[in-house]
Length: 395
Image (cartoon, rainbow, N blue to C red):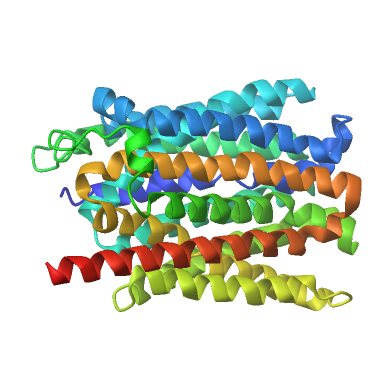
């Protein structure tokens, strides 16, 4: 592998995470300025998720045609354009239009890079890759909080868009690394020999449906947690909006720090146990956030939620080739990305409906329900894999 490639992949994931939590952090103020309902942010996230789902399903074709390097550059350019557009928006419908390129830009590169690292690098690199996503996702609300205290949310999106433009320039300059003859492009090594199973055929493979449900619930939990944390703190617990926006970054700081540490732990602990560890920590974080009248526990609880989320996503992705085979890794990773975004598409906006029409204080209860389903599907998958290993050992 070219020495400089892994840092470039890490940088691409910083850019992927940078805007993810910015809208949620700014929305309590944005909604008032745009005369939008508090639940309307769900519409924006739904459009972003639809674009991401579409591009995730199309990731195999896009990578085969353009290569991962060009797909990565195109993705960052699209998200940069969307963020600059957000900074200029004066109406809610404009945000909805700009959400389309944002979503399209995120999906294909997410699937391509995840699949590539899962096949070609060790487990610790997958954790550190998603740690870089956490770096971006942690920086987004901090930048937005600073701008909310000064020039406002428009300036926040403009700053984030400018950072994305700078990253796009660096990625463009790195394109020769992807053409290095020593580097197997994602797909050329495996796509020539893969079985080209249809999505229907993949769904019939034992264990695929539980892993997709597990991923659906995990990303629904992560997306809801990140998008609605500031709103929950502001409207449900009476925290100042500017302070709450800064606090929202603690979830992503927890993910970032957790994935940095998980990279080392994963050298000794197998993926299914990393997932179990994360689920236990999420449960503890939810208890801390849920306790009434204990505002002092909100910050550590949110950090603990992030630390618990940290190992789950990279562990599921990295285990994909070992569980189901290198030949279907890219296509199945694309399906997992799509189901992940379907989870965000449906479940985060659904909580917005609950928050507006029932009670925003149901936030930790809602997250807890998602956790229960995630744990059940993960354990079903573990039993399926255990049975397959026993059957293989008998033969």
